[in-house]
Length: 101
Image (cartoon, rainbow, N blue to C red; front, side, top):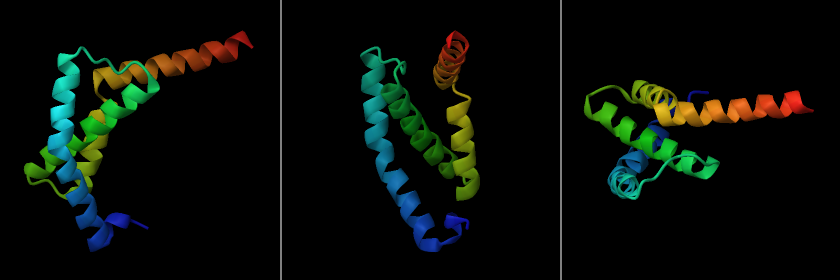
């Protein structure tokens, strides 16, 4: 089932992400000022969620339909250099652990 086909789900998701945008933007500006680096699983998760929200709102503001905005925001997160680096490090660690066993 495509949950976004339900008007209530779609509208609620949009409202939730839109409301989160400004606080997340403020948080990320401050974290960057403090030298934040997404190097742990928790910090990478915070960064990825924050980036997703910011990019989703950006795409919606461009007039792109919600389903496409979500896909583009997902792509933006997965293609971001810091997220790529984190995922690459985790994959490398997992491979190293399997080889050492």
